[in-house]
Length: 582
Image (tube, rainbow, N blue to C red; front, side, top):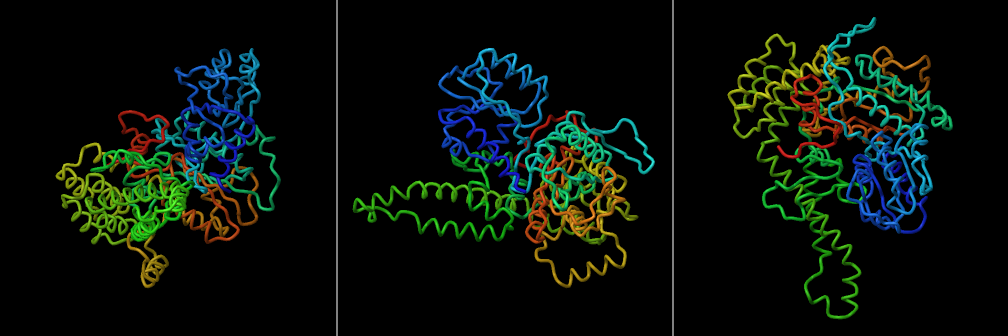
């Protein structure tokens, strides 16, 4: 189950189907992102695709010597653009691929527009998602939910708070069914009972599977695959934590947007490093260090530098003969690529290091981890207060500490939350950020959660914590495990309660699941991606793919919360842009 490979194969097949000759790739805004995260421009150029254009661009020239490969989402706008295109074709022949199911009426409209008979092929290739890592996908959506105006009561439960933005329910359904079709899975579905949004998405996906039953007629496996739909509001702690593994840290501190990082505001940055691409598909160092912690990355960067120094041409003395020169020219592309990799990672790690030091993130993170994992109110209030009084602690880090405190000690009899809010005010934290504290509790507080996010203080769990303490924590900054870890662990062991995560429909799995697709409404995180990576590595026979409506860092998560609780000034459209710098 590899989502990156699935999308790559679709794109390769499109190009292959069009045969030899020069080609243009016509895309829309979203399919441009879908393609760019799995293929570099130079890789596609090698396949005779010499031009990349947007279907909505008004300034395209007529080039009858080119074949057009159209890869588009099946939206009304795109169909209209295509109809206009086919009435006045700019290219010799068109191979049209939609990233999801398209209606018969729209196919008919396209056929009627094709008066010049330039369309060679129309197919559905189900790459309607961003393949972030081989086991992680995103839909790049922000603001999937909104505040409920009504209060829905059901026999089993009271669903407070949030409901779907209608267009977002439709887009998440399309994205999820596209992943299932790309991976060739027709799953049984389980969902988080405490979330009305999870139930509605489960029903919506099931509806498509039933309607398009011929598409989902895959070879039966001994153990049916499983789709588990969860809600971000069950664990609002994970996206609030600072991260210490490479990919997660880059996203938290610099912002990863479709594998791109904006470094334009880094002090003294050179022109060619203002925007860099980090892709595990095309960067061996990044692929090998995605899940390494910050200390290990420092050592590995040093080794990379030393390796580069050894391979670097040693001045003029080595270029005395023709054979020396030939050897240099032969090795030059590899040397140049290595040189680019070294300068890129040295710059990125250098900037991470500067921010860690400038914002005192090691100190901040230690207290965050204590708030997330331990139950010592006296110690927690002292540490949070101490950091709030530290002038070097940033506005964002101050407010996230108060949020973590508010979630952990929400109903503690000695809660000092009002006093901490005053501290934030004294520190000069903006009113918008201060309002977010209440919004986060409203979004993911005890009243909303269906699971026990905060560790109970019964004798059994105290004993477990004691033994964990005896064994020692490998790293004080990474002791937190997302709630997703426990959920998936229970699921793999066949112990996940049907009363909390019911099946949709009458049937249920008798065996332990093997192929699991888990989707987080309102977004997943790179910490959860690491959890899934480790479970895949350490659990033979189990394959898990994680998806989310977005991949959040703290800033984008807080924007999601503000939109969901109705406290944001303007509603964001579906977008994958994450704010970059703090």
